[in-house]
Image (cartoon, rainbow, N blue to C red; front, side, top):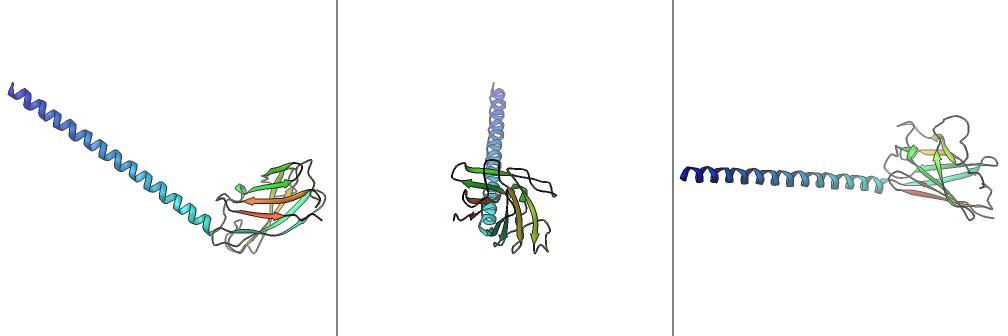
Amino acid sequence: MAVAELIGAAIGVLLLVVVAYLLVGGTLSTAETVVTAQKDMTLLNEIRLRTSIIVSDEWIDNSSYMNFNITNTGEETVTDLPHLDVFSFDKSNGYTHLTYDSTKTGTPDPGRWQIAGFVNDNIHEGELDPGVTLRIRANIPAGESPDLFHLENFQFTTSTGVSAYSAVLNP
C-alpha cells in the first residue's frame, strides 16, 4: 500500500507542475500579446500626431467638378491615398461620402473622386510626402451642385484619422 501512495503522490505532484507550467505559459503569452498591441497603438498614435494635411486651394472645373489641392504639412508620409475619405456637405442633402475612383484617365463618375496629380513629388512618387501637394478631382453626386450657393464644405480624412476641411464660401 505504501508504494501505491508514493506513486499517487508522485503523479499528483507531476500534474501540479504541468498545470503550473501551462498557467505560467498562458500568462506570459497573454502578457506578450498585450505589450505588442500597446506598442502598435503607440506607433499608430505617433504617426497620427506627425500627420498634418491642409486644403491649400479649391476651384470649380466646370458645372460638376470640384478640384482640390491637399498639401502634406506634417512629418509623416501618407501612403494609402485610396483610403482617403472625402465627404461633401450641403444644407439640403447633409454629408455625402465620395468613393475613390481608381481610373487614372478621364473624369470620375458622379459621387466619386480621383487623383488628378501631384506637385513636387520627387521622392516617393504616388505618395503624399511632407511638402508634396496632391490634386484631387471630385464629381459631385446627382442632386447636388458645386455652385457656391449650395455647398458648405468638404472634408478629407486620412486612414490615420487626420482631417482637413475646405469651407466653400457662400456669396
